[in-house]
Image (cartoon, rainbow, N blue to C red; front, side, top):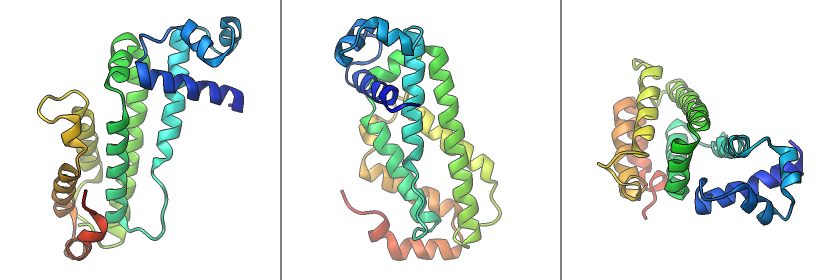
Length: 204
């Protein structure tokens, strides 16, 4: 992807994040970018194509949120991951996702599938790392627990039991993280958790 086109997608993504997708027309995009519609259509076929490319761009940016850190163990990595995902959820404009789901269902399903697969892979890698470090129990099924994690993240986007603000609050993150780690941790992992809670779980 050339830098000019990448910059175009970034600006359009910013527009969608601020105003939603449906309300931003191709005329709005060309005007905001300072280019003609003819030039815009050299990059994309139509709005559906633009939405698809913007969402793929956004996914490629967000997929890099899991930083590799040799200094972190699996428990620390998992809390880092939780914080990143919750930050993304908190910063996402609900109307953008509503418009994507309702007016561009093919693109919505495509991006949702990619996100699920990425999260599944990250969780399985974390489970394997924790087991190799002796911090997690050896006897749980990595794929089943990874699927449960993905289901939990999926549900929050359209659930009236827990609000987005509650789900992304420090208190909620703390309780879910402790609940999750105690369910998979070995004695060594529980001991590490108890001895390092202040470092891993900073206050609000």
